Length: 136
Image (cartoon, rainbow, N blue to C red):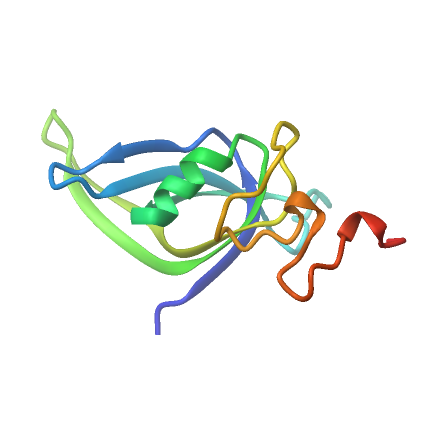
C-alpha cells in the first residue's frame, strides 16, 4: 500500500503549468514538522515536494499561497532523471489525490469551490454552521 497523509505549510506559491495535451499540473513544497524533537530538543522540519493534477492543480494554484496550512493525501512517487552534465538523480515527491485547505488565507474573501475547506466563508459542509459564531 502506498498512502501518505501530510499536514504542513507551503514554503512557496504553487507553480501552475499545462502539459502539451492541456492537462493542468502544479507543484509546491510543504514544510512538515517532525513529531519528535531531536537530541537538542529542537523540532526538525521535512520539506516535501507535492504534485497535483487537473482540477486539483488549478484550485491549488488559484487559492493557495506561501504560508498556507494544508493537508495532503496522496501517494509517494520516486522518479529518476539525468542532469545536463550526465549525473543520475532520484527525487521523491507526493502525488496528491486531495488537498484540504486548513486555514483561511489572509487575502481570501471567498473559498475555493470544492477545496474542502471548512474555514472559508465562515460555513462548513454540514448544515451551514457559521464558524465565526463558535466560541472556540
